[in-house]
Image (cartoon, rainbow, N blue to C red; front, side):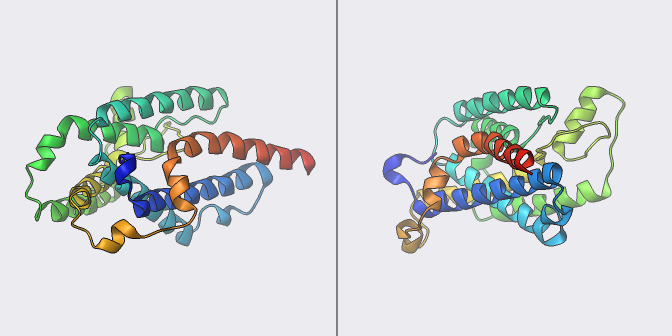
Length: 239
């Protein structure tokens, strides 16, 4: 994350807003599954588009933050350890999360930490167009290609890259394509932000509530689902 002396409130706010929307989205999911709420409150064309947007913002902001960190591999490893613990707990709850947002972010941090010098070699003026093109190409590839394999390892790899294989179940499911290129786009923007090349209002803007959420995004994300589950089960009991 950004150093405390250099924190930019709007970045924390965007992260906090994204996490808040994710929590609300997961609350709707619990209401549908455990309280028999109408399914449209969790998934419908409008919400599905909004979900993709706020996940994209969250991943892009994570990419921005990675430009402020010298320890992306270490940060990513910590996130992966937390993600593995979540997998262990959710498997025992029979609601397995094998590759959710934390698995994805941990992978992206480690990947970027190991390959940052490579991406820095791409000309700055060209990089955003390359990343946007790769995002679009990834989405089209996922729509029009359907690779399959009988090998269990390859099947799992295809699933985490974006080609969901029959039998692969993950209650929180975020894939590498196209999000890896959204993350890299964030690292490109983060370079300019770190050098102070954005407009002055970007660095000076004050936003209520959401920056605080953004600064504690990891803790909130880890704890929100157990809290939501407990509250939902309490409602089930009362009803």
